[in-house]
Structure formats: structure tokens, C-alpha cells
Amino acid sequence: MIKRILIGTFLLLFIGLGVPSFAATQTAKPVQYASVSPIQLVNKPSVYLGKNVKFDATFNKFSTLGLDYKPALRSSKDYISFLVKREDVSDHIVPLSELKIFIKRAAAEKLVDLESGDKIEVKGKVFSNALGDAWMDANEVKNLSPKPIKKP
Image (cartoon, rainbow, N blue to C red; front, side, top):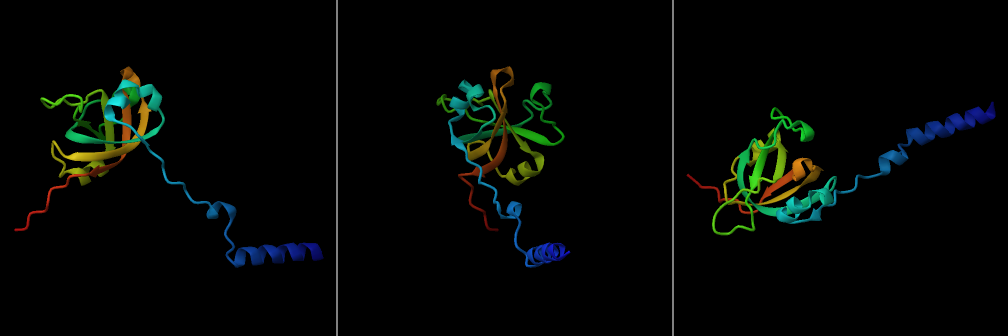
């Protein structure tokens, strides 16, 4: 009987004092991204499959490329894709269509000011290598060359 009371009192004090549980004290580790060039990514997509990657690139345009393709499904209802410029071609603009980059529509709406030629940083995860191409979800897209805001 006394043992039950002591255990009950201990539990009440332990919970009542707000002593954090083990699970509450663990913090989420920041996501680590491997730096890679877009060309490296499309040349060996299977090496990066399931990995978090980041790269700098030149934004080309928003697109619907790769959306609703069943083996690497990203619904056109929820996602939009975008293309970056091929950096290994310098005399004209060629999109790197072998790299399918998807971003949720809500996040893409915050990037409406992106223009072709803007330098961007992309962080995301490669989720498929269907058709021998790299397919990735963009978790973050940062404009590295934002235009100055024009004052009226």
C-alpha cells in the first residue's frame, strides 16, 4: 500500500513539475544537403536517388513537364514543375529538361517574381530516376538575384 502511494506521489510530482519527457527533449536535426551541379545530377540520377541535394542554377521557366506521369507521380493539381538552364551550353538558352523539379503550388505562388535568367538556389530531394532522368521535389527555392523593388 505504501509502495503504491510512493509511486503515485512520484508520478504526480514528475508530471506536475513539468519534467519533460524523453521524446520532448529531442530536437529535429537540420536537413543536410549534398552540393551537386544540375549536370552531375542528370548524368547520374541513381547515385542521388533518395538523397537531399542542393545546387545553384539559372531559372528558365515554370512548366508542366513530368506532371501526372505515373511512375514518378506528382499531381498537376498540387504541384507545378520548373526548368533550369543547361549550364554546359553557353551560346543560347537550352532548358535542362532531363531534370524534373517539382514544387508545391502554394510555394510556387511565392515565386511569381522569378524571371528567366534569375540565379536561384534549389534545395530538395531526388525521389525517382524514372526514364533515366532525375526527378526531385524542391523543398526550398531562393532567388539569388532579386530585382530591386520599384518605388512609385
